[in-house]
Length: 468
Image 1: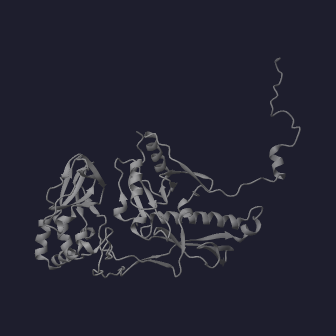
Image 2: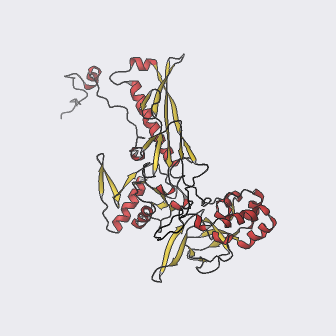
Image 3: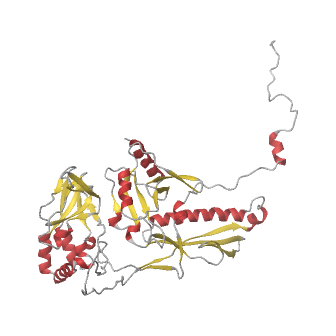
């Protein structure tokens, strides 16, 4: 290149055709419908059988059950000191429905705090049971002797559990199994002697304990229901027992819950910017999607009817090694007949897969609406991102038997609502205000009911962050 010759760039060249930027002003742009990241698979809503409810409530009638008050106990921690909330002592079977606050407060003061290191033996089997233990924090194994004389782990207890409750009712009770700390444990112990001393000064407590002892064991079946007296295998002309099936006097009623919002759309938007996509239609579509996401969240986490909060404590299990092993899933399935499905957070399903890989197991999969769903023992494991994951990377796995005919878990809704667009979901026009804004009331009614306690089980405190 000679000196003084100009260098011509692409920008300096004269334009020979219409540019793309100007051409787009005359083109019709192809657009997608509005997208939304919050939308999930919502397998719980899709798999739960829904029962139509008239009158806004569903009553669950059950046989009369004596075994109440077998729940979980709550504590208060101040520094390194732990105290039991007095009213929570009513969760012990011996103190169920006992409501004398002063006496319960004195019993709570008599609870002595003890600390155990991992591996420490808390109690040994065969020794007298003279204390009830309240587990404030930690994990405890129930240890017994197997059929061939070797040691066997009979179960795992976690925060809020208790053991040794027979000490409050019987002077001759002995430990049928031992208890050993798996992790560092904080335990509160209440002795039978302290309870007896308080009962000597409290007529209400003394009468209450006497009434509990008077309930005959043979009057209930293994589920705590009033037994039906029968005769079988007899000959001749013996007296046939008389019986009847007793019901709960105050059965639980599930009222339909509600999720609502008011969708606002400016009339100018609805009139002028309505092609090629209907603005009102897509605004309603995304609002309904958000409402359904909230509905599934409530079905899992609501304290009144949510699955995690309505599972009976004897149907709550703890993993033996923290991770969700096949053995833990087997134990979860064995607690009920005809388990229809398992629900787990996607990260929990990943942890289950890692445990399968360690053991060389390849679970079967089934096709559900074009999706490959993993199974265990033929029971599908559906993902549900509404199940919470704690900061410690633990979560829960839910097992359910479903359907009214199977005495399982059912969803509740009411169909036939005014302006209904889906079962139990309505969109009502509320008018146009003075600012020319159109208002729509979007409403969903729903709830869930557990017909019998063993229809629902939960594997709690599942570790999902362990990779080895």
